[in-house]
Amino acid sequence: MRKLIILIIVVFSCLYNAVAQDIITLKSGDELKVKIIRLNAKDVVFSPQGVNDTMSMARENVTKLTYQNGTLIYLAEEETISDYTGPVSDSIYNAGVKDASLYYKGYKAASTGTLVSALMFPYNLIPAIACSATPPRDQNLGYTDSKLMENPSYKQGYKDQAHKIKKRKVWKSFAIGSGAIFGLYIVSVALIVTTMAY
Image 1 (tube, rainbow, N blue to C red):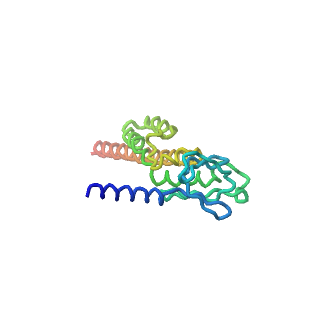
Image 2: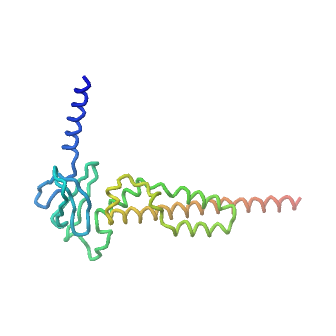
Image 3: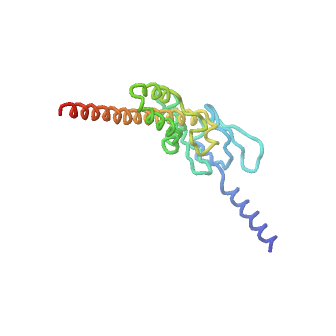
């Protein structure tokens, strides 16, 4: 019985490994079942199914990468790239931006600190500027796929978007905290003036 259970586990793990592969879709329409190692600016580095060595293929020959976790990366074709060929035109950069919008939550400490520092109005401007100017640390990014973060373009997109989110949340907390303290000052002055008038 014990041997049967072990055999079933081995068979299922082999089937899973056979099915759960990354796929490179070529411009010709062919699909290669591989293990994608890295996407570079000029090529895709991969390990073919059943082979331990790595190979590379020119990026211009590839239209799509499908990771086993379901992530799709569409590679920009030459004719679709505008005059600006920076990272924004790269679909993997945009995938990083999208994922940061979904998963980055590391701004909470900076946002809360800025809100609490509102007690020191108007000096709370100093921590707000410092927090918003500092990019998020790598350990606070909250990304879910370390393999994608190995890609420089994806990582840059993720980090850029995370920094934008952090800035927005910090300045929102600054506005809320400053507004609350300013409102408290107004109410206090109004109460003092009203008390003195009687």
